[in-house]
Length: 437
Image (spheres, rainbow, N blue to C red):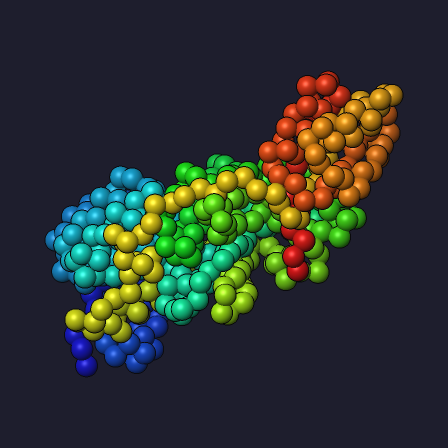
């Protein structure tokens, strides 16, 4: 049997403690599967006295994660600290430069410094594995990096944030407000005390930027993603979507076009009968469309200690199974130095059209003025419905428009014109519609 694989874990929060526990409890099983023992020989965290529910007495303690990465007698450095700078970046870089394999769940770090870190890993001939950084326990990274040789990806999209999906699911199922759902998500541990990173789309954008690089062989461009969160989704939107035969999901979408790569994160109306619409709660789902395979949908637990720990342990096991001298797959599918510069696609028509909700003053001429603004911007309307805003607001009306294929720019310009006309009593709502099943 080969020598034991020595693992150092930096960060012993929920995920780090779960990883250590799984490696301990499943030791015999992992040895049979990998052909060698996997042993935690070093750990680093803020509080050495805290009870984490797992015996770490045999591991050497380090206060400084970077020092552990450089000096500890380890083969694999597992980074579960979090953050795109500071100790996380310093320790991962130190580990790679020292010729140690790295496993991380840190999507923010990869979105900002992934290409640079990949170059170091490939130069040193070590692995940089990050399955847990995107979609939790779903093996989407391994699928795209290793199992789809010969396929040309045309589009990758999905539900990549469990917090947002949980909130939207409960809003629809129980008819409660966004704020009430968010409070429950925080109480249950699905949302952070400061949920901005999740609900405004940043978390999804980081994950999408990594998938984009894998799909299209481009450098990561997390700052070039059109991003919109779910904090402005109301029960009026949820009800209107249901009446039209749709369900609202926060999607991350990346697709190849003739002018470049399009990346976007935003609430989307998807047909109720579609597969993606059936993904509820904290579950994640990723769809990959290719020229050979067609469409592949991967779905499963997207967050939580066990799901993330499962992905981390899987990455460690892959390293345990590898042998010296074996040529490792490039970190992002293509050699890091060959990744192409990201070229942002030009604005184009969205085939699915748009849902537009406007709350307006109930007075003569408003309906006609809205229709004129749409016509002035060459927007063809599939339907336009006027509803009372409710007995408590009799001076207001809700106008719901569904457009045919048009551009984001045209819709935004038309809505801006309606706003300037002084007809609105509340912020307008614009949501893309996806027609595809």
